[in-house]
Image (cartoon, rainbow, N blue to C red):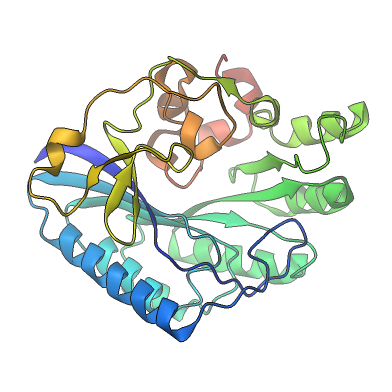
Length: 298
């Protein structure tokens, strides 16, 4: 096989079954036409992956809403996990879907980037879904949006999760830079030693980044960009000569504040730290409880 390529796939689906007040896609409904188009584009993408015999692939589904309540995405992940050229297929998800289909997946190649939303589901129910993944030997990470009112839920979640499961916290920014008190920051930092990096972001302009070279963002039409945050088109995945578009590109943004983006900046060392769990944001077990001693420099 030729070199490895990681693909962040985001089709037109933007609906979600949750109503989180901090999310613009809360309880949003897609039209039947959008759902039909999304399923057709997903099928085309899966067929393209199936035809790749000279490349190894990693795939992360990053929908605007919740994709895995849709049978098409569950079927896609089942099929992709059984393809020898797919090293990992992962999805961002709230874990609210039925789990029986996981029995038809290769547990070594499927993984989940799970987010707990305290206002939308109970801790017990969410932990039950995590236990379902544990029982099947499926890798995952768990995270929360770092709102102050979630502090007690975050502490309870950390106490209940297995120690080797990485619990990440995404900074809440909608209320400005003074949203967190010092005590809030201390609690979130104790749970996730990488929280400060996520909150501050990375000065990225001109820095090397694997996006656009070995990591790309792809939409339902196959249009490829280096990452979700940089809107400049670099080509189309389905063009026969697409590989020519995969070249080193320094970051054009003044700052990167998205884990999906800065995780691919080599000077931060995330690929070494996360290893095979980079796509699903899962630290290897020996490091999950020791992130503070292995924190990348910024």
